[in-house]
Amino acid sequence: MSQPAPKPNLPDRGDDGAMRNVEFKAELRDLPLAMSVCGTLGARYVGMLEQTDTYFRIADARLKKRETVGEPTEWIFYERADSASPKVSRFMIYSESEALERFGFSPLPVWVIVKKTRELLLFGNVRIHLDMVRDLGTFIELEAMVTKECDEAACRASIARIRNALAPMLGEPISAGYSDLLADSPAA
Image 1 (cartoon, rainbow, N blue to C red):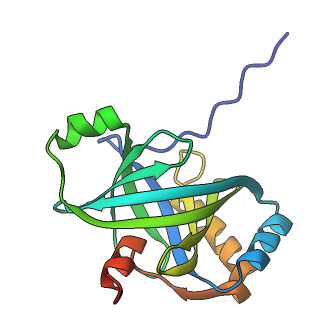
Image 2 (cartoon, rainbow, N blue to C red; image 1 turned 120 degrees about the vertical axis):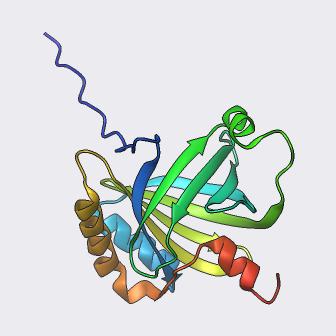
């Protein structure tokens, strides 16, 4: 007799369908060592992603179109505070057709374009992003998806565990997104 399939660890969606994660970002001083430490922790290497994020000016939230080589384009609408400590982000992901339906057919005003190479690892419910961002530098981003099985407190604890293990490689915590950093840089 076959066993029932395990229930997936689905995102905990709000009434509006938005998902939530707890995220943390910092400068990364030593990417190869961070990769090694992540492996020692038991993180699973997923792959290297080439991404272009186009950010648009919209009121009261953030919107980016993410183009990843070999993957379908995603539109990510999100809200989060600018804080250097781990913070909650509420987001929705749209396909191209859903984005046209949601945001209209007229071109949106482009604010800034961010190009990066991302080494993606998974550790439990945490996505570890080791990012090399063009014209900015090297960073780490930790994202823990809030689910019914993994509440916000558990997500914060998972991020703290990874931060502690990587502490010698971390630079300053970053309160803003790459788009804000790039827009504020002298080269912009």
